[in-house]
Amino acid sequence: MPHRTFNVREAAEYLHVTEGEVEELVRAGEIPHEPMGGRVVFRRTDIDGWASCRVLGLECDGLEKFHRKTSARYHDLSNRHAIVPELMQIRFIEPALAARTRASVIREMADLASATGLVLQPDDLRASLEARERMASTALPGGVAILHPEHHAPYMFDDSFIALARTVQALPFGAPDGLTTDIFFLIASQDDRIHLHLLARICAICHRTDALDRLREAADAPAMFDVLLDAEEEILRGIAK
Image (cartoon, rainbow, N blue to C red; front, top):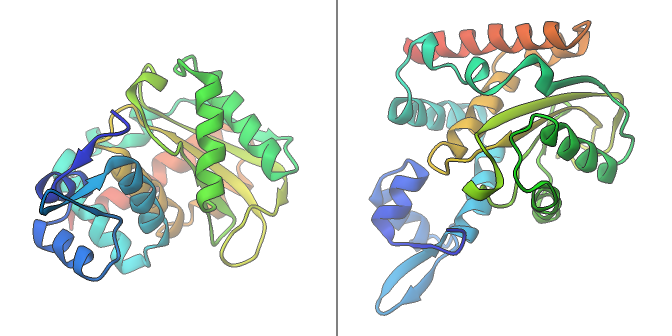
C-alpha cells in the first residue's frame, strides 16, 4: 500500500500523535499534505520520509517523549517486549564490514540483510535504501547511521528485523556533525505500524546509553549483541520510571 493516502485521524494514528498536533503541523506548513475535495490528505510516501527524518532529527528530550508514546502504544514496559532479542540475531551482525565508501556501505548492508533469509526482494531493498539516502542521510552525530528503506512495504520482507555492522574504517556518510561513521544499523520493518517505534528505539539506544563506545570496543558479533541487549534494558528501565 505505498500509495495510500491518510486523513487527519489516520495520519495522527500512524505518527503516534494527536489529531490536534497533526492539524498544528499543517497550519505551520511543517508536514507534507495536499488539499483534496475540501479536506487535507497526506500521502503515505511523503509521510514516511518526513517522519523518519523527524525522528532522526529529534533532540534528546523530544526523542524520549516520542519513544515513550510509541512504547506505550505497541509494547508494555517489561523486558519481554524488548525489540533486540525479538528482531536481531548474532548472525545479523557483521563486526568487520569492509566497505569504504557510501555506495559500498549501502550495497554491503543490503547484502547483510539478504543473508538473514528474510528479504524477499533484495533488489528492491537496495534501491529503496539508496533512494532514502538520496533524500537525506540517515547518519547521526556520534558516528552511527540507521539505514532503512524509503518505503517499508510488507512485500519486501518475510518478517521484520534489524541488522548491524561495524566498518573496519570509519567513512564519510553525511553526518550532521561532519564526522565519519563506523556503526551502521539497518531497520527492515514489515509492519508500518512499528517502523517509527523501531527507529526511535535504536536512536535511544545509541544516544541515551554508552552503547556506541561499547560497540566499538566489542571483540566480535556475540559481544556486540550483548551490548545491545544491555543498552536496551537500560532504556526500558528508564521508560518504566
